[in-house]
Amino acid sequence: MSKKPTATDAQLILQLYDLRREAEMRKARHWWVVEFWPQSADDVMKIVGAMGSQENNWLRQVGGYWNMAASFVLLGALSEELFIQPAVSGEMFLIFAKVHPFLKELREKMGDPHMFGNIEKIVTGSKFARERLKLTLKRVEAMREKRAAAKTS
Image (cartoon, rainbow, N blue to C red):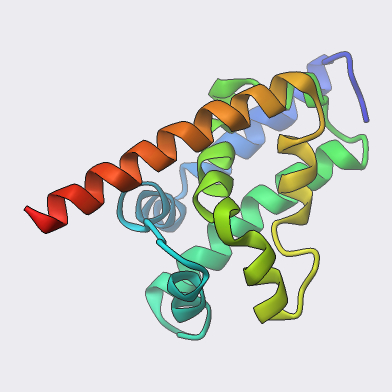
């Protein structure tokens, strides 16, 4: 993996950012970040099984986007050091943290051992990334608890 960021890396980051600004991608990202709070693998599987639904499209669009972007790093086309900066990929860490607790079960149910695989390699691939993941997992769990408490009150 490329370690030292270059001007070409910065240009690719800006292009990836532009893709995130597309109207439908904004809706999909909003759904992932604000509305989609799976509590189990079954919650994710409901969306996976709802082919043609807006939520299924959004699940695949955002998951595919971050998996693709992570592949750029894994294949050496983009600097890992630049990519894992919070301003660049913070959303990827959040999305991964939302599915992390049941990723093994999701992979089994989908019959896909590589589901979220590129993302997982990046978020666990360096000390800095692992620390960010640990922090993000704590934040996501706190949000899950807060949302669950709000539903019961």
